Image (cartoon, rainbow, N blue to C red; front, side, top):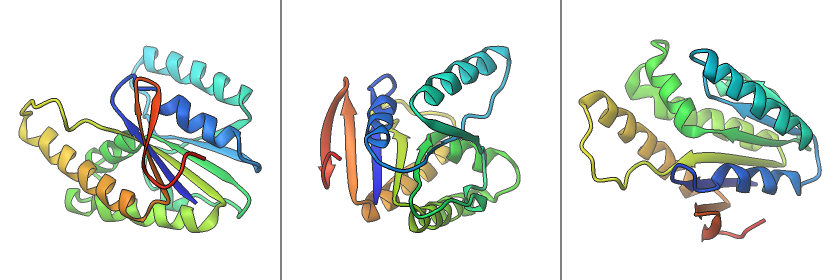
Amino acid sequence: MLTVVTGGSGSGKSELAENIAVKSDGKKYYIAAMEPFGEEAMRRIQRHRKMRAEKGFETIEKYTDIDELIFTHNDIVLLECMSNLCANEIFSGRTQKNAAADKIISGIEIINNMVSQFIIVTNEIFSDGILYDKETMEYMKVLGEINRRVFEFADNVIESVYGIPYILKGNLI
């Protein structure tokens, strides 16, 4: 089962996704895609790692190439977050920008076919009405394509607005 949780910054989407995972039976894995840059990021990561461990998650730091991960059928996997994974794939220099969406979608399909439940957190960054520089707009275009494609085959799509879940597709698990 694939569930996607989306929302703006500070919307409660991560907490919602974690709560969905915690309710499920099975070994819980948390794919953390935020690549740490600087001391503050490292402190934040350590704090989040501790909080997730208390909820029963094993954290996997994986910034690119999620298709390389191996899980079992009973596992619950949470990916936090698509926006970071997308940026990492695009700007790592290892993936062609025009191939990033296909690579990420392939990785999602591989993991989704492996596990009992896959939960993905992604950001809604498209509504602010600001025109950004060319590189940022290219990133947003790729993230938008990934979101559209994943939403299409997801079982559940939930938007978190100020901590309130809105079901866009499927059910609240």
